[in-house]
Amino acid sequence: MVTERNTDLNTANQFDTAVDIASKTLTYTPATKTINNVTGDESFTSGTATTIQGILYRKEDIWNIKKFGELHGADAVLVTKRTLTLARMSLVSYEGVDYRIKNTPIIRKKKDEALYNVVHLFET
Image (tube, rainbow, N blue to C red):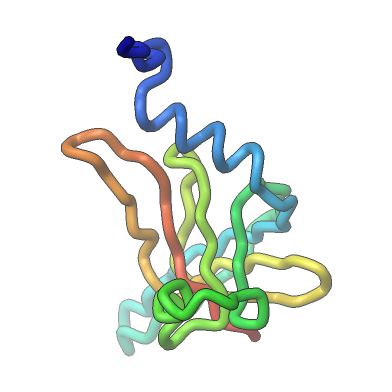
């Protein structure tokens, strides 16, 4: 007997549900980039802190060597829902530790459907 798959949920909604189940409450402080029109130097200004939900895993939390490879060059990885907008150089805080987002968020997709965002974090 073949059991039909639940077609009410698309793949993206299933990832949203997974993030809801496994997420931690984090503090997110967005950063706005300004470029000096004389020198070309970049500067970042912090905005208003908000609370977000995301899956955060740090180097010290990882036992699986494959997952540890995902952290190459980073102190932590943050996975969030596809609808959450994250900006490079913004601050993410969890359990008294501040992390800086060093890369432009990577949007993981299946075909044309956005599933979730991934960013690498560096302890400040």
